[in-house]
Image 1 (tube, rainbow, N blue to C red):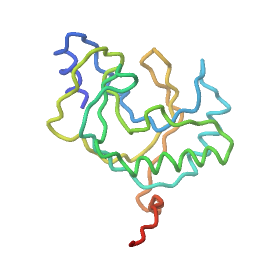
Image 2 (cartoon, one colour; image 1 turned 90 degrees about the horizontal axis):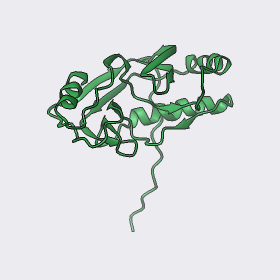
Image 3 (cartoon, rainbow, N blue to C red; image 1 turned 60 degrees about the vertical axis):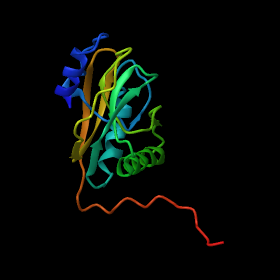
Length: 175
């Protein structure tokens, strides 16, 4: 994924470097904006995250597009990703129960941003799906504008955890 992004960036007129491979991530939600890591909030959030039991998440990214006001090139699943969306809701509810701040990212489509601030750029041609099983989730503080993340917690998913609840469906009656 990263090497494809590096090659794609090098072939564009408005060249921007691809995001560093070790910082590629899928953001599920944000706590708030802070000038420095909020230590007490991080401590409480770590306790809540440690209490969450969820299954590993299958991830498949099969499309590319421009996100964030068409400023960033990202990979995303064209048909969405129900398990990721369900886990994000579990996480939000857990934080809400403990009165911790959180909000969904502006674009709720699960995605991985490859190039930030790329301006006019063609989407990345997808010749194969990028797929893996996410075995963990993390709490990071993103140092805005510094291309740097500070990790504060990492939790493994549990293959034996109960399945996510099925999303509600409208009752369909034959007419």
